[in-house]
Image (cartoon, rainbow, N blue to C red; front, side):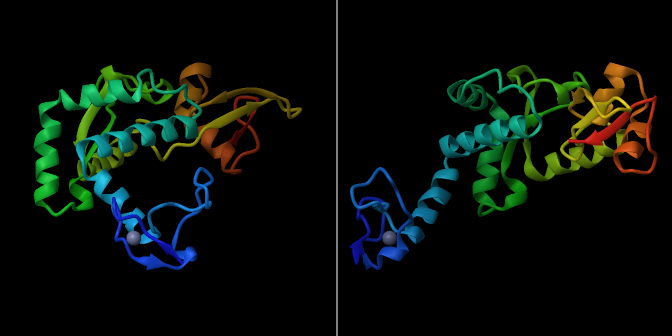
Length: 205
Ligand SMILES: [Zn+2]
């Protein structure tokens, strides 16, 4: 048995299996029980600092997934930038009043109004926008309809007919911009509907 810390936790005696492992602690377990830890994390994400940290880690994960360089700013720089946006504070208050509804949570993402090739560039403060989760979701659908790149697009690779790799692109649209081949045909090839396009083989990465 082990006592959950009274500092951020319930202070109750609980079985060791009720604690997450933590290599940094002398007994190999978190000071706070699993249940309290979840609550603690949730409460943290409901602070401005916690929410902005979450935004930053999402952006880093997204960059990695899309094979982009890391964001051009640090976590602290993002914090300062977000805190300087009046709309963030309005949306944050609305989110609190909604009882923390998911569709009301303020998000921070790139907008395609300035430059529709944003999807192949690293995250930059100049291209960020604060939006509600719901509005952001609508934007993705809108962008998909208009053929602007978005989360739904997949990176593609270009190969010689002999199978040797030539280049990788962030998306079919990115490949079209750089090679001049139609992205519609590239994606047909990726999906296996045609064997080659433009004399090359294209595959999703
Ligand atoms: Zn506890």
